[in-house]
Length: 273
Picture 1: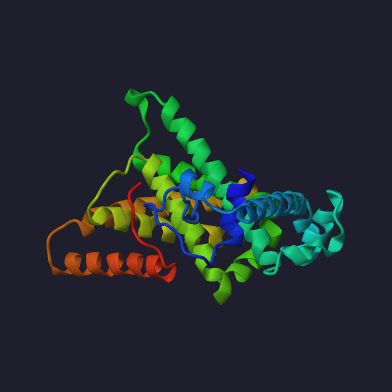
Picture 2: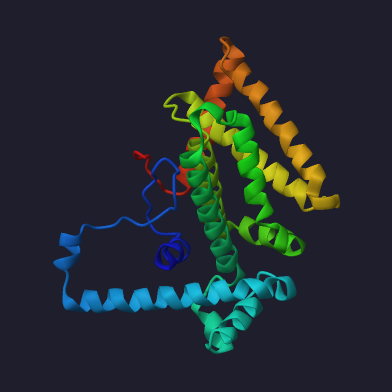
C-alpha cells in the first residue's frame, strides 16, 4: 500500500492510465516478463526507488500530527521526519513541499473511503439496500468527516492545491473520489448519465467542502443539512436533463464537454474498469 500511495503522489505529472476514474491513478505497469528482461542495474534501481517510497510514506504519515501546529508545510514534514528517525532536512525529499503532504492525505482518505464502501456493499442485504441518493450522501459525509481533525488548516490545503502545478493531482483525486462513490452506489451506466452524475457529484462535494470550513454548528450539523439539500437538488436536475428538448440536449453537451476537458487536462485516456 505504501508503494502504491507514494507512486500516486510522486509520479502525478507522468502519463497515467485512466480506468473509469476507479481506484488510484497509477503509472503504466509492465508485465513480470518484461520486468525480468531488464538489466540487473534496473533491478537495483527499482529496489532503490522502493526503499525511497517507503521512507517517504513513513515520513508523510508521521507528519500529519504536526499539521495542526505547522500547517501543510515543509516544517510539518521536518517534524514528522524527526519522529521516525530521519533528520529534519529530509523534507528535501519532497520538492513540492506541503503540496505533497496534502496529496498524500487526499490519496489515503480516498483509499480508506473506497475500502469502506466496498465492504458495505459486499455485506449489504440486497433486499435492504439504501436508495442511491442516500448512499451517496452518506459516502460524501464519511469522506468530509476525514477532514475534521485538520479543519482549522484546511483552507490552506485548498489554496495550495489550487495553485497551477497542483491542479492536476487535485483534480485526479476529486474525479477518483466521485467515481468510486458512484460505482459503489450502483451506477453501471454507459450513457450520458455516467458523465452527468460524476460532474454533479464533484460539484456537490466541493460546494459542501467550502461550506464546511465556515460552519460553526455542533458536529457540522448545518453542513450535513446543506449536503442533503444539494443531493436533492441534483436528483431533480438529473431527471430534467433526461427530458427531451433542445435545452436538455445543450445541457448534456455542456456537461460532457466539461468532464472530457477535465480528463484531457490530466493527459488521460479512457479505459475499462
